[in-house]
Image (cartoon, rainbow, N blue to C red; front, top):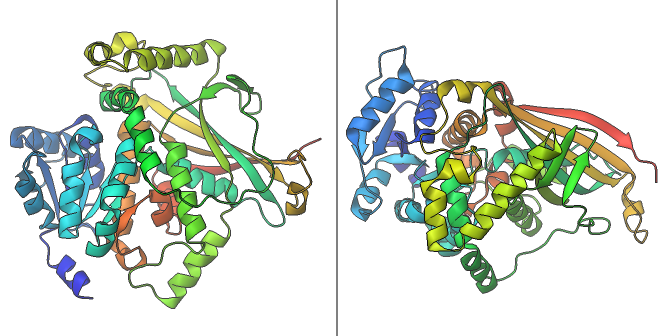
Amino acid sequence: MQENQERNTLLYDLIILGASGFTGRYVVKEALRFLDHPPLKTLALAGRNPTKLTQTLRWASHPNPPPRIPVLTFNTSDPQSLLSLCQQTKLVLNCVGPFRLYGEPVVAACVETGCDYLDICGEPEFMERMEAKYGEKAAETGSLIISACGFDSVPAELGLMFNSRQWVEPAVPNRVEAYLSLESKKRIAGNFGTYESAVLGVANVESLQELRRSRPRRARPVIPGPTPPKGPLIEHQKKIGVWAVKLPSADSIVVRRTLASLTENPGGLPGVNESVEQIEKREAFWSTVKPAYFGVKIGSKSVLGVLRFITVGVIMGLLGKTAVGRWLLLKFPSIFSLGWFRKKGPSDDEVRSASFKMWFVGHGFSNASLASQGNRKPDMEIITRVMGPEIGYLTTPIILLQCALILLIQRENLPRGGVLTPGIVFGPTDLQERLQENGISFDIISKTALSL
């Protein structure tokens, strides 16, 4: 109770870090929609350049006059300025990437002060390193550190859970494959920060593998049925109309971490001060979520589109291994990404015209007893879909703000602290319903018996 009283005396409900960046300014725009309505009464923006922050506020509030919101300065290389920020707020939303370069000092300050933290990171090495380094202390200080609270990786996490919950007993899923389709009436233009993070991710593959080898193995869920075959490099999914290739994103890694947490804690993680009713609700929710093998592929309506994905992946994989190659990739992003990424980012019109569909194709068994019969193939298919606006500048801010509002409203129902995934924290909350109310839909497409 003393912790909650101390939280309530802080100056701000939340502070947005990196508010003047490409994604940060859209996060500010989304936050202004909820300002002055409980629970978001007080908000501050923070960054290195007060002038840019003021310009962001003016842009985000247009055509209305900008509200009187404090503009604070900080620098990730100045630990004291970060500690001062974190001591003034209940929650930090961090939009300063690449996170492997700038994220750790912010996490460290939040953990030290007991402040909660959400970010839009999609970098597995950073997330797993923060878990290894700060997990125990965050649990002690009561700081919730949750990465991947944007398009990476909430649609994948909630989308898998949504599909999993359609398998009503005695049916069980064996595998769920997600197919991401990016669409636009104009041109698809990606976030340069995402591109930069991907390039640095290639350079840090070995350090991620070394980190994993140094840590104890986590529990693995028991999944009914055989391990799925690898399948072809390029897949034609006729039922949803896409050609697809494996996408080396953070989504499958974050999902695996959530499933490991659920295996270790079958009823989910207890809240800091849950009611009996809330405990029953949380445990009931997790009892309906069934583990499955999970992967993500990126899709296109044509084979040529998939070949373009593969070409960009090969270029980044080869050049990203050397310092000179990384310099070339980051200096000329438009050339080496075949036009998908550019330093100045997409225009507002390009953002408004873009959207995404993420199909979840689940294969499993109509009866769990069938799964144990040798190498029997799945006899049932369930297809679901998550759909929403442009992924980096519209969907990501929507998700981040809804996670923040849940954290501010329902803090006593959430874990006391730790470095955790969004799925294990927000799964049993009303996050899916909130996203549906804000333009991100969850749909059941089909349930089909498969002929063997």
